Image (tube, rainbow, N blue to C red; front, side):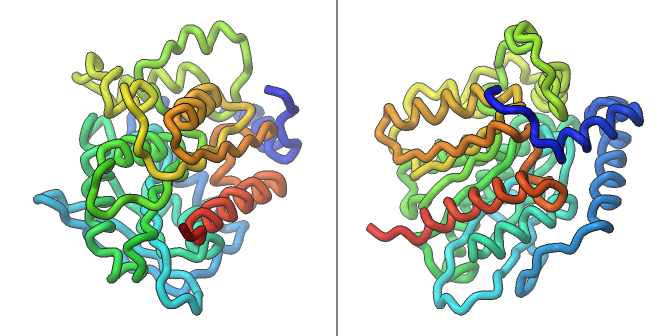
Length: 319
């Protein structure tokens, strides 16, 4: 970490700790999800949702898998729009299309793209590889329906935050060589190594607000279940892929106060070394879930704006 935590985010962290907020994955999954739902909905009452032209709930179906998605269409005069498949965060256990509605809306509005937000199955009820299977199926569906979605089959991108960035990165690796290649992938605070050495992170002695090393252990336990012995495979650990050449142009956003920061940096370096056009966006004063705090911190809002601008620029770059 090279910068102090943004003061507005620090105030939020201090208030949560003062009220004795439990760790995000404590209790049963149902209890953890309800806590998150209440927190998100309470915050949403104090903000205005980004405006889009329309939303539509559908089912993305591919080879027998039926995955619920919500399609966001922007207010735009562009004849053929890009499409962004968005995979939300939440440690593979928390989150939903509805709870990340504000993030998807802002992506849709600011990138000026059709956004397909994926309601993939959650662990531990649906452990690995269920979420990865859903993410890949929904992305294949979007690639096959690009004309219906945005109109431009050459500009379909993947975007994910945290666990969703893991899903996006794994899907992008699986789709290399697809008849319709992805135009880009956006990985925001990605967790890329499910076999990570959590003890080494703890040994740094750093206070990581909103995502502690103990949370990383819970995520791995709940997500992998009986497949813990597969944690170093790809999926679920794209950082351990033997070869990352041939991936689409990549944007990686990392936060300074995030235990996953080093994984994002390491993946960016691997992609660059493999000749993948890569842009690294560093937000040293942010904590792990800053992408969802754009309405609550001016600095988080600027970071979110910069990420959206970078993706929009990439999708509108020709040649």
